Each structure stands twice: as structure tokens, then as C-alpha cells.
Image (cartoon, rainbow, N blue to C red; front, side, top):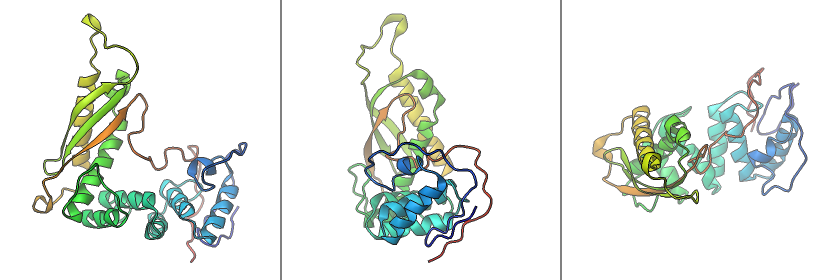
Length: 266
């Protein structure tokens, strides 16, 4: 079944998501709210928001195009919506698009462009002040990619480690180290044969995640990288999401078959 839609131009699926009881959401266009609706209902609601030039609706539409929920994945449409929301002052859209630009995921890879977008949005990485957009864009991309790599660490998941880790990142070297790790599970560290190994597990997992991120990203120009160190705090917990927002982590069920691509109409 197809729908004629003014802005997103989303072509709907015959299968729909189950309709859940409506709550009182913080935003009508939050993805957690939209996934409680059928595809038809979600798109109709987004079109209302896009008519009103609502930045949350633009952000959610970009997520849908990025993840392929109810529509065929389309990086061009994703970037258009996030760019429009970022230009209107929506910092989550700026951060999401900057990460895509830094990674070269569906859009042209460019650390300087990613950094400029972040600077324009007034965003920071830790408390660091980067002297140039290129170093800022690389540091941000590397940090977010490291967080995603850490989330998939089997060793960390199986350890049951839980606590707060203060992590220092070295932009020039492309390295990370755990400065402190504090348990927050309320229990005392075991002793003897049951010695607590959570600190070493967290350190090893973080180091491996940072190295994996460096390997996956486009190699930065060392002559353009500033020597900047910055700190971030990670909440370590089994199954935790170490990003501020994992785009698509709660989007739709698996196995939905796309029929045709969307048509973007201004």
C-alpha cells in the first residue's frame, strides 16, 4: 500500500507495527513513541511535524531513512533531513550527521566538515578545546566509533562489570586509557580466589575498542591533527549503551521487507 506524502515521501509496507496503548510522550516524534504506532500512523504523524517544520520530526525522519524502518534506506534523504534540523539549531541532528560525515557512512567522508558542523552546533568533546575543525571532527568520530565498538565487546558483557569509568583519549596517538574505574553495584570487591577482575576487563575492552575504531576509520592526516587529550566518563554495565543515543537501537522489528524506494518531494 502506498501513501502520497508531502515531505518524507515514504512508501509504506503492507505489514504494520503493532499498535500499543498511547502514553504521554515528551515528544510526539520521538522514535520510542513512533515505533509504538503502525507505519501508516507514524508517517502521518511525521508529516504533521514536517508541515510545522518541527526539528524533532526531521530528526526522526532521518533516523527512519538511516535504519530503513518502514522505508528503503536512503542516505541522501537522511542527510537532507538532519542537515535541515541542524541548520535550525537541533544539536542531536548535528551530532548524528557529523558522525556519518566523519565515518563516511552514506555521505562523503570529511573530518573537517564534521568538525565544522559540531562547532556550529556548539557541541564539545569532553572539556577539550580543539584549535581546528579537522582535529575536532576526527576526535568526535573516533570517540563515537569507540563507544560502538565497546558496546559489542563480548568480554565486557560476560564479565558483569558495572561501574563508572573515566577514560582519557589521546587524539594524536589514537589511544585511550581508563584513568579510574569505580564499582557502582553496591557490593564489595571479592577477595582471594574470587578476586575482582572488573577493572582489568574494562581497561582491556576499552583499549581494544579504541584500536578497532582507529582501524575502521579513514586514516587522518597526522600533520593536521592537534595534540589534544580529553576525558569522557562511561557508565559500564551489562548490556549498556555507551553512546548518548544509539541511532536505530529501538527501531522496528527485524525481517520487514522493503518493496520500493521512497521519493523525496519538496
